[in-house]
Image (cartoon, rainbow, N blue to C red; front, side, top):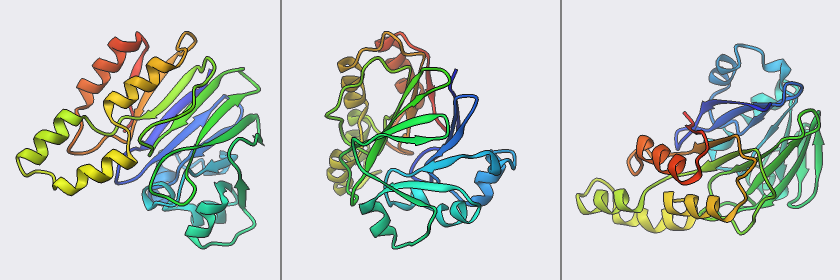
Length: 235
C-alpha cells in the first residue's frame, strides 16, 4: 500500500513524502531544508529521489540543499533553465516518457500553469502494482487516467468564496484573473474526478488550498460525497 505524508501544502510551500514501502520519494521541496528534515524525522538519507513540477519557489525552494544531500532531482528542461542551476544530480525529464526511480515507474505529463515547462506525475509501484496521480498548479487537466489508486490533486479555491471575497474587498479583483488561468477550482477538481474511472481509488488528497478562497471542510465533504472515496486535506 502506498503511504502519503504531507510536510507542507499551499502557497507558503509544498512538500510530500510518498512511499510504496520500498522506495520513499519526495514530491516538491518548496519549504526549508530544516523543515524537510524535521518532517522526515531526520531520515533524509532514505529518500531515493525528488520530483519537482515547476520553478516557483513554493515548489522548489530547497532543491540545492536536497542535491547537496546526494538526492537526484527530476525536472523538465524548462524548469532547470528557469532555476539556472547546474548539478549532476539534476535528472532532466520529458513529458510522456517513462522513467524509473528505485521501485517506481514515473511518467510526467503536461499541465497548464504560468511556468516554463510545468508537469504533473503519474507514478506506479513495482512493489504494490498501485498507481498514483500527482496533479497540482494547473487550472485543468486534458488527460484521463486508467483506474488510479491514489489521487493527489489541487483544489485551490471556490468560485463562490472568491467572488464573495472580491465583493467585500478581501481579495483584489486582479487576483481572480490569475487564479482562473493558473490554479484548479473546486468545480474543476470535481469535473476531473467525474471524468476518470474511480473504481479502484483508495484515497483522494486535496492539495494547495488557498488561505483565503477555500473552505477545507466544505471541500472535503463535497468531494467525498461526489466520489464516495476517503478524502484528505493535505497540510
